[in-house]
Length: 81
Image (cartoon, rainbow, N blue to C red):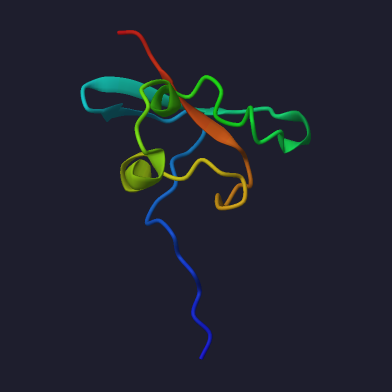
């Protein structure tokens, strides 16, 4: 029997804004030339505050182009209120 591997329950759309612990974040497409892994998370709010973002994907949604349905690399940017 073949099972479809489903890592996360949701994916946020590019441009979508949401609340994360009182902070408004926006899903922003990350343009990375040649998918330079050292730069993939640059500018991401979750990376900047040093959280284990893989534990937070059920809240934030997936960011990796390899796991997103739209195949886009994204980061989560803080939006000033």
